Length: 101
Image (cartoon, rainbow, N blue to C red; front, side):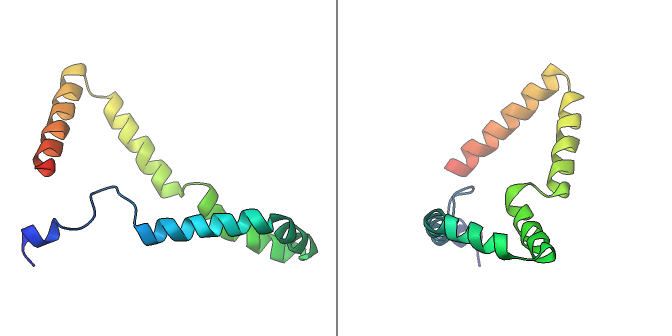
């Protein structure tokens, strides 16, 4: 596959339409059935409630590795002076212009 063929996909950062549609449908399902889901949750044993809660956690809070990476990036950025930050911003903007063409 050549480089030109690879560029024909979705734009970077855009969401997959199927995934977006599925998320919307799941949200609608949960909204419509929330009361019944709560009633079923209330009937669960403590260990099953814990399992259910643990299964939902990845959807509610970021994973520790993502948080650690974010803190590391922030720490590195804070150590840069204004000139270095401006150089970095200009480089990013140039690369963004190159990919837009």
